[in-house]
Figure 1 (cartoon, rainbow, N blue to C red):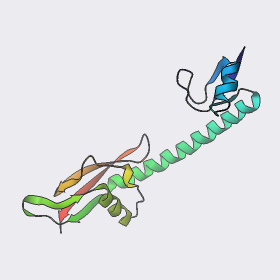
Figure 2 (cartoon, rainbow, N blue to C red; figure 1 turned 30 degrees about the horizontal axis):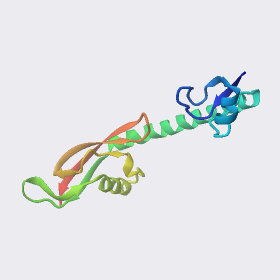
Figure 3 (cartoon, rainbow, N blue to C red; figure 1 turned 180 degrees about the vertical axis):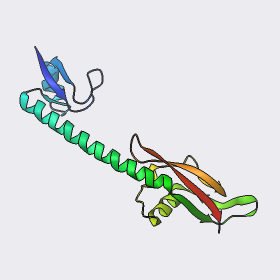
Length: 149
């Protein structure tokens, strides 16, 4: 006998979150329901799931629009980071994403250092483009100038 369930999480070889699938009654009763991987597909649960889906979509849209406005502000900014340098423009030490986060915080931007995509620390004087991943689909490009103290 088959029953319909709504998946609460992705289940390999079965479906993704939010899918309504037919499974054997024993599989649902013994595996999916006790592990909270699915809920029974009745009217109440379907309405609740649709409501939660709409709310999360609105929240995601709000976050994306906030990230887009932040992207415009960040791309208009040009950071200057002062560091001690030796001959030929080589730095004593390096400029890391922590230094960039600190400089952004001084400018009034609250961006976590994990969002700053710096493949390797900056070890020379000059102008650099640093990618900042604000949201899953929103990435800003920041101009960073490393200058001698």
